[in-house]
Length: 360
Image (cartoon, rainbow, N blue to C red):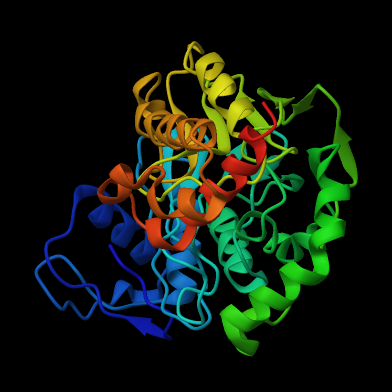
């Protein structure tokens, strides 16, 4: 079922059993139960009816995936999938930030406990951040107690402002504040240029109020989240989140799928950390870019191959006395067809890896 960002939305085509239940839920609250079907099972509903029915259905089991589609430029809500009981994920696009996608190019999620909600990453603008917050509110009215950022990059933190009204604790690796503050001016200028004035509106840098040094547990009621800082890998401020109730592991940008990995930390540290993370027993993992959920250990295989190819080529070129400029034209290019956005990020990855490996 799709709901557009208009006063009324056309529901066309063949409805699933969930869609039929959804429409019956709406009719129970609509005076007279009048319908104007556009097919045998579908009809026109208002946005207010949609939100009311969504709240009612959250108490019913096995309604996965849950989706709510909205049109640009001001999305009311973002699409969700419930990948495990009480664990919801939005999948971002495989794109650079733009006025059209409004910074919706990373994964984000939230976990619902019996007492409270924790949001994990907030997307790349206040506008899509509000879409994520509206999606939370379509699932539950429980307080949003925590907003967790898995690392400092704008596509994961620039939606933080959308949650200020909830007065949550903003939680992150203890190194994130320093890193984000030092780059704030550049991040803001770059994203304003790429997003345009409209999509950029409302963005502000919000630093963590609760720093995590090593590990921390957050109680949501009936389930806890284990937060763990990691060695320098994708960045120097990566943080993973594990849900105790389902074993779901949020990896942030320590895991990329389809979208080419981006290196802003240590290629040596990242490859070593991948070896450790592949040994975890989590039933499902959520990448920072890629599908809603993946399985260990195979989820890491393409990323590991990509980073290992860059490292091997860079070491060989360094040993041969080649320059960085030469490395950026050859190292890792056998991986080009395996990844989206390769041309946007690969040379930067080679540059960072070469600079690090020169000092081995």
